[in-house]
Length: 172
Length: 172
DNA sequence: CCGAATTGTTTTAAGCCTAAAATGTTTCCA
DNA sequence: TGGAAACATTTTAGGCTTAAAACAATTCGG
Picture 1: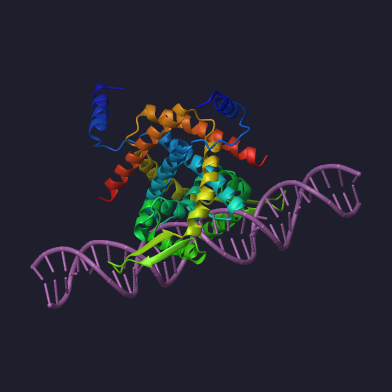
Picture 2: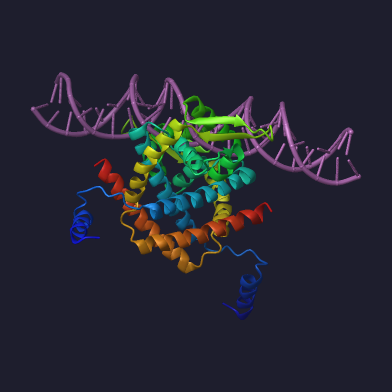
């Protein structure tokens, strides 16, 4: 390679002024592996919830959010926490109110807002499921040492921050 | 704590004969963080695919599988690779055949089997999307060092193996 | 104060996804 | 060879999910 092309390449890598097709195969593989892990575990949890408790994963997730909020949450809160669309929450809540697990009421101070809470039934059923759920998760991760867990936590925190930054770059 | 209870606890942890409510909060947090990362990145990729190419993520994923298999794949192959149900693939393929991206034919040697391939259109569109997709992923993971990437790959491989083992324990 | 943005929720249309049952085909083996 | 088991796919019924549009209530700035 000539001195001139060396110089051009150096400029490229320094300034990013020219498009050189870089190799991002490693990041791609990492993303696929991350996705595989999540899909695998999620499918396993979904199946166990259905078999043991005849409940779906989204219902369980919604109840988990509410269990942490004794004073209730608004639908937008839930939607942000669960990272799903608003309309999605509307339907989910509808079914859980119908089955007696949730209580929904319009806020006294802002008539746009719906506040939802677990009912007694909802809370007791959730607690029962959550206890077992925790053992499933422990079993699924059983081969990881405490050090592995710590290290994964750290790297995933870094990953999350990186992805959030990238997302913010696109729509500021 | 008495020597007797020491002894009992030791037996517990050695033999797992008695149920002691152990603390699995760390594993639970790890799972939630893993899920958050995946959901975040998946949502971002989904949005970009829709905006730039008006294509859905499942369609893109299916085409990605086929791009790696020039001789085509059977529906079950695809279903296993993508870790989704058979019926799901049927519908997905239907729509992609309809739009001219896929070619589906019954196997000559086994009339149960459907073999699908990318059409010329499908392949060229996929390659165009994949090139850009790769840069999105690189950007989403941009803050990870090469060492971080390697370490995550290793730990996720271990996680996957652990989860598969746990799943196999349940349905052998 | 009043209209314009903003905010919270629901609706709509389309597609994705699953588990289970049904259908058609091949293989296995007694 | 005949039928049972296994396999590949489709169908079914129901639920999940999204983006975008519509609707309702509040807030904000002039």
